Image 1 (cartoon, rainbow, N blue to C red):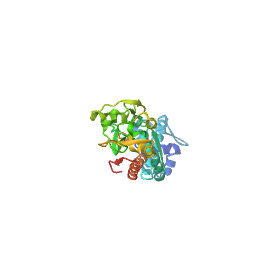
Image 2 (image 1 turned 90 degrees about the horizontal axis):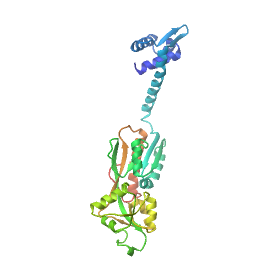
Image 3 (image 1 turned 180 degrees about the horizontal axis):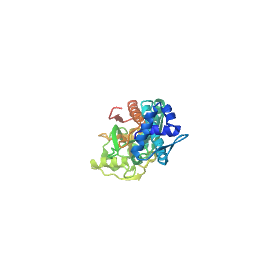
Image 4 (image 1 turned 60 degrees about the vertical axis):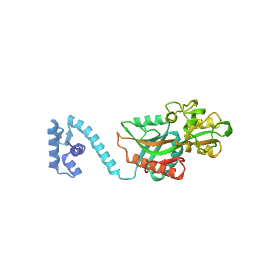
Length: 315
């Protein structure tokens, strides 16, 4: 049996007559009768019985009718989606972002989507990278931006941009610490002698900082551990220690004179990866948001809004 035969069978039962179904389908009546005989031969049971008022489905025919309607409806829906796939992207797209990325990308991306993808409903979920990765694995978000390269059978990572991490501290008396004037480069080893405010172990930034310091022979000790960038900045501003964040995350506070910052020498970079599933097809709307995300990142880097960053791949 094929979909055409199922469609013919549904039309015959709904019409109550092979002749009326033939008119409805614009198919010759003998051809419809032949299709029914072939279906009954394939299944080994009668599907229709004739009455003075027309034809009706047998018990087996009722079972086939119920399932045939579902199959035909699903096939027609698939046809509509395929034929509409070349049209304007439409539908819901869920994007997972870590807080530090959402801070700089979230609003520009939403505004760009409203203007360029009016039929796409973009939903941005903000959380720590570990949660975003879990959402990707569970299919709760369609795309994610992460700082870690993901080695996962069902996911693919694409490096989009690299950003510079900076040491930053309170805007106190520079003579109170052993650091050079703000803006002067410092080695990663300078972290070893400072009271640090860092995320807890297992957090991507904490692991990256400790790995980089260990490679330089420096041992770090966190005076305070807290998994929220906003809270880290507040605690540093109040003079409780120093920390490490990307340049864009502390740009406003340093420009206002509330924080001091130092670049690392050599530069301490981390990469932003686009992570997408490879074990399921991506809709046209998801692909459109992915492309828009690349373009928006490129524009943010070129305009200087994402300070200290450079694109790694073309957007």
